[in-house]
Length: 225
Image (cartoon, rainbow, N blue to C red):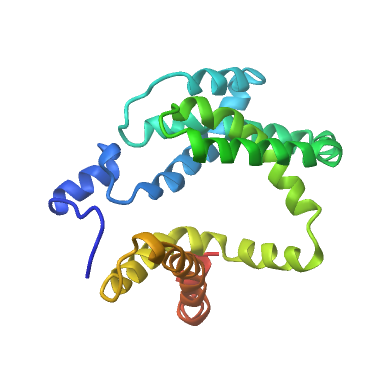
């Protein structure tokens, strides 16, 4: 079966996964570690620094930490975690802002997204991530908040299984890709149907694993909720 980014060996794979993380064989795993660090550090930093936490988060965004143990991701995303905390602390003001402004913010987000796709190949990530990340928060929150009822049900269903999808979507996509490449390439006209199958596999296979397998094992079911 075709496999992307095969490590040179077990030792090299573990080194990339846990230490020299720029070479991680599974780049998406950074999110679990970084979110864990933020969750345990935020209460401590808030008790020690108070409002200076946001100054620290902004400062970290502009500090080029090395890609060791995902430190670069910690620095890059601390600002967005802090912004989420601020939104939660100011919930009435946050939802009032969304109610008034989410439509034009969604338009700005869509315009920025299209601009990056068409022209942003060489734009630095640090430059594009900050405005797009901050605008996306009220824009997408507003989109979900004012969705049609049938879309709300879809979002709720996806939200119920989001942790499973996060944990297993890379494996599921890789499995589907490895099998599909036996019968077709994914170049040219084949790309769109190939991409649709991979997207559906990345969402539905983890849900199926949860519903039909992990729910039968109490410990695994509880750990993946």
